[in-house]
Length: 66
Image 1: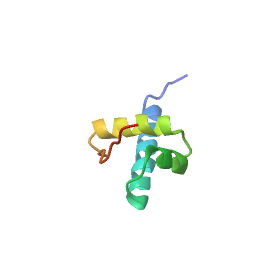
Image 2 (image 1 turned 90 degrees about the vertical axis):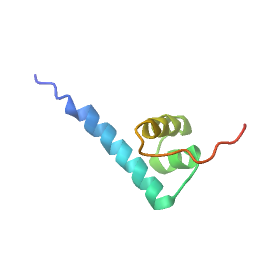
Image 3 (image 1 turned 135 degrees about the vertical axis):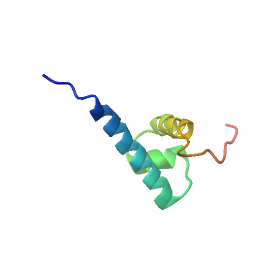
Image 4 (image 1 turned 180 degrees about the vertical axis):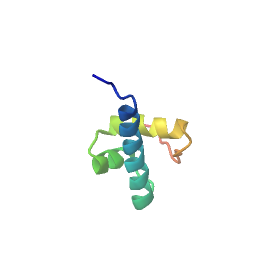
C-alpha cells in the first residue's frame, strides 16, 4: 500500500481556494456568515481565516469587543 502525502495538501488547497473565492464573490463578511456559506461552524471559519492570514492570503479588517 502506497501512502500519498499530497492528498491532505490538496484538500487544504481546495478549502483555501473555496474560502478565498467566497470572499472574492461576496466581499468581506463575518466568520459566522462565511461559515454558513461554506457549510462549517463559525469556529472552523475563524481557524481557517487565521491560517489564510498567516499565509498572507487574507487580512482581517474589523474586530469588535464582545
